[in-house]
Length: 283
Image (cartoon, rainbow, N blue to C red; front, top):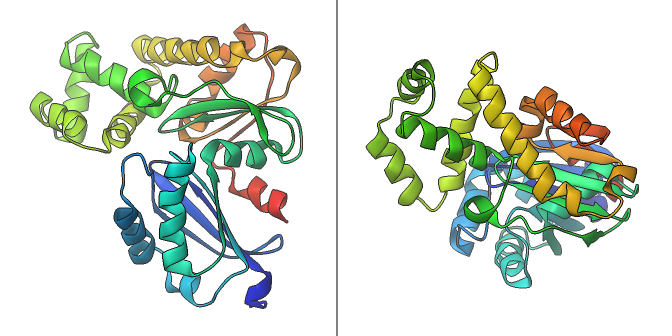
């Protein structure tokens, strides 16, 4: 292994999972995946606990050159400080904490100007100038926003299931697959600080039923909301490269591309995670 003075850690965290890379310039020495971290829903102690117990010991063997962390919920200095304190306590290494949206932009576009979007557990978008975010339509989270996200799709679908609006075969299939009841779902949503994760998990039930018109219409309508309430607010949005990252974007990419085409937009890239691009950016 190279000298620790040359090695950095790059971390990209959604509310569901965190990708870690131990990197020597553009060469990946080790990768790891841990639970997602979000300072809106977790305390410093909970974040520290997740890091220490889930990361391989290799990541703690030395004092590294720097840690670049891009995370969900890191949208203010106060929230960034929670994560930064946890990372410094565990690694004893200089840390820079940034938003998951900036990580998405740098990972998708690297040094190219364009629109970068997240469609995962949550959703977000920004105009990126090749280094920083210059404009952002607020995400607002899974209660007020997050259009097109796993949490939004899960919320709408589960609501239809519990109100008996969804087709009967999908209602029966949902309860059977998740071995749950309406009462259990209500408890998971209203008495759980990580309700967005549960709702997003339910949304992937739809992926097994893409032949059903109800499912296609639900996803299509929610992607339409994402474009109308987010992308169309950026000036000259049709002239810019448009990129997406996240499990929802990749899982339902065909529907996403159809909706983009209807809006007169050309999608340049859809990827599951932005880590490869982040490694290139920081190299």
